[in-house]
Image 1 (cartoon, rainbow, N blue to C red):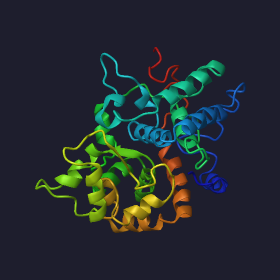
Image 2: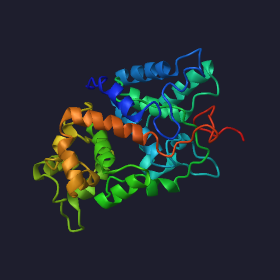
Image 3: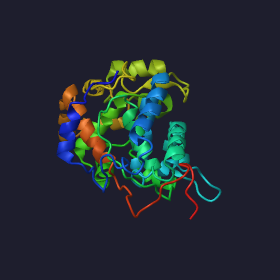
Length: 322
């Protein structure tokens, strides 16, 4: 289920203006691709894909997030490894990222009608928004694609599920984001699933003496142990938001305030007074939807490449010939 929040968009656009930061604009492609509507094309393909496979919504959002935190929103995550370069796609945290085939289909469709104009970075940003089948936040466009992708940069820049509050906030601030963005964007965990491998230590050996993380609600911890019994099957999936992994809502924050955050990084939000207060406020759906829209616009502008920088790839998986 996706909330109807279209009424928030005019106000948000009024607040941030017609530019989303970093030289991005609304309707950037309107005059550049007069034979096809870029936004409508992306929307139609994504809606069709998500209707057939609802779990895809979380995957496309994750793809956008993982892209933006490493070298900015430049589609560097899409580049395939080469004989000489191990790209971001091959890094540990990105091996479970999906949705590449959807981006490829969109790119192929747009190239057929408007060749060499629409960047892969913009396609990733638009697809993440359209995955929710409602215009929850405005997407400003005009990004260019990066030419560099290095696996070693992922671990340093991408926030980890095991990170504490200090590390998380430091990483967000390094990208021009603040504590409100940190807590709000963590709310993306309201949809999607994870795997037992990422939480097994938290359940069975948190401090190295066979114990569970004491910050977890005991009943919830026991439920997780039943889903992920020893020996842990690393591929077993579990919901990031208990009983609500397909519904984009504020229930994540309700669960979090009951100490039912799946990851250490979730629980970390309650270890700081300011972030804990924000997490409490965001239990209100209207407040969460409004702030999530604002934070997604801010995240989508991280270190973007615009006119005069980067390139527009012909194939999202390969850098154009120089």
